[in-house]
Amino acid sequence: AFAVMISTGIRQSFGLFLQPITADLQSGRETFSLAIALNNLIYGLPLVGFLADWIGPRLVLMVGGLLYAAGLILVTMISSTIGLNLTFGLLVGLALSATTYVVVLGAVAQLVPPTQRTRTFGFITAAGSSGMFVVPPIAQFLLVNFTWQMALTILAGLTLIIALLAFGLPNRPGQRLANQPQIEPDEPFFPLLRRASRNHSYLLLATGFFVCGFHVAFIATHLPAFLGDQGIPPYVAAGTLSLVGGLNIVGSFSFGWFGDLYRKKYLLSLIYFMRAVIIAIFLLVPLTSFSALAFGAAIGFFWLATVPLTSGTVAYLFGTRYLSTLYGCVFLSHQVGAFLGVWLGGRVYDATGSYTPIWITAIALGIFAALVSLPISDQPAQITQPTPVGNTP
Image 1 (cartoon, helix red, strand yellow):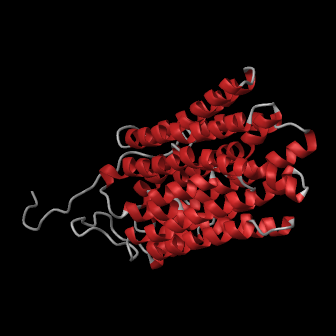
Image 2 (image 1 turned 90 degrees about the vertical axis):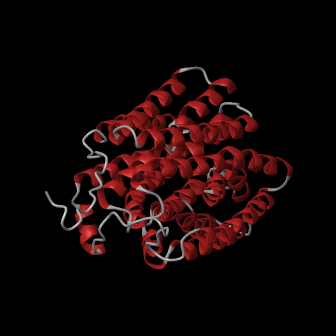
Image 3 (image 1 turned 90 degrees about the horizontal axis):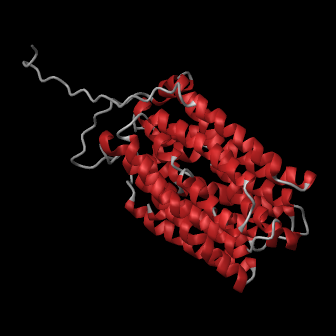
């Protein structure tokens, strides 16, 4: 959980670097947006989840932490947009895929019973959100007092802690606690993958998660610049991101807990619908420092609350043996949405001088995701204990 906190906390502060980096490169916002969009797309590739399922999560997380540090340091040495895409886009994207939810949730799923799985996922998601609560104010402090290059170098030092924390994860794929029985039959990998690709609930989960990615990536990357354009001070923008992370601690843990008690699909539908409502209200009311902070708190409660519900549904549908791969495929859809949210945000702004078309798109997508979540099959798994020989009625 601490590894996810560091990794996602630093990731959610990237938007604060948009203006200083583009000023140094003398480029438009689309340049930075494309690099972060590539970062999100690489971050979502299921290759790392596949590796974690086959060689074990410990080595994957360790290498990811080292790659994260190297990628951030290399960003400080760039002098062109190509360098920005290769470092912030490719290397840091690969590192994120190895140090966040896909690998960690897949590992933890092996160690907890199904009745506690979704709330455990919620706890880990909440831990990641605490990183967003803590790191953006630190990043803003570093940007005010140092160059953006020094700020990234200091953050790179934090990512080295992730490599050390990797020793807390299982060393082998499918490893369980000694007292944890195997209650889910192992199914061969490729037949399971084919079955997943034909499962309508799995595809609907991926569709909704696409919208989730669009929302969070656009807001995390472009909200600080959007607020700055309207005359909101930078410290308020950093505080808004911090509130997103702080309230998401509560939201992720709460929805993780609710997911073990209530229908996950209705909770997912509620989250997407409430995002649309909150964004609409944000656009309609006059923009002030207070309304920005209120928006951060409101959207934060529903920010990554989709993660424990989505991953928990995937685990119910297909078991935990290859959860990193199967959740990784759904997460790829999330990151395709993230790619479009970040890139289109910069593209539309450079073309029109406004973010309004993207905000309106985000509202429409939220309503769409709320509707497509309703047909998902998410009944709680019934664990059937084998009947001992001789005890048949």
